[in-house]
Length: 310
Image 1 (tube, rainbow, N blue to C red):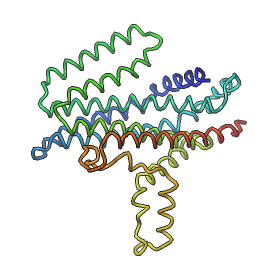
Image 2 (spheres, rainbow, N blue to C red):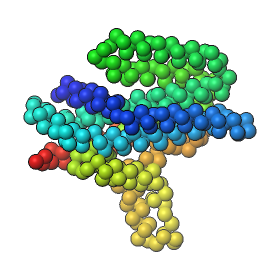
Image 3 (cartoon, rainbow, N blue to C red):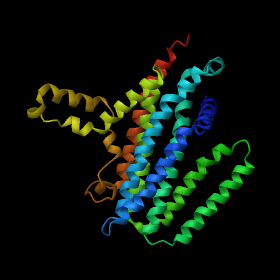
Image 4 (cartoon, rainbow, N blue to C red):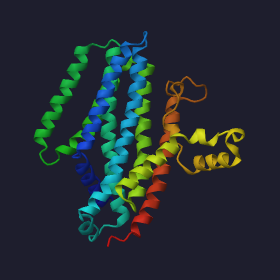
């Protein structure tokens, strides 16, 4: 079973990285990271803070957009082109196929976050007075390694970006060590973003199991907006909005994933909140993400199993 899921995941990843919209969003993400350097120069001795805050926010925003787009189109493309029919006629169960599609999408999102995060960390390293020659030299070395791998790995070159992007992210995080807390903020935000988009992709997978791409994108965006507003909805004052709206808000906050956990306040990411250390907080958030994703994928598998493709 694991081998079949793995094959579907690799095939999904291979198809997803060919999407032009993905490269467009990556270009916007990298452009926003670069623009944070311009905004930082306008601040008063707060350049590193501005770069870290804007960079972390852009990583989250663009990764969520990628998750919605890929989640809404990946499964539908297979059904529209009718390539899903010969696949499911083999010894492959529908829940295995759905799980493979989800894991392939998650792999693409991981590469996206790693590359965007590496760009932010590289800019942060320059703000921390790390030698520009050292940063450029390390990036050039990674580019050379990538070029060699792409030439030698003719049939698996698309998968080279998986370990390569993670390695670049780790290298840039090491170079940005002089930035101190700002580096921790960006790294923790990147990890939390992976957790959040894992939930968003699972939501998109659920809706795509029975809906069209347009409706899937709309529904997923709606769940995302409610999830990001969960704390606000749970605390709507009854004196202002009435008891009915107050009850509805609490119900929505209870029923939908609380995505505000994955965009915590700056003091939490810096470990400045007493009793809330950063990395245990991130670990707890990751466990919650696994729970939400598992529950959503379980329901998705049940719905997809009963779907009639005729």
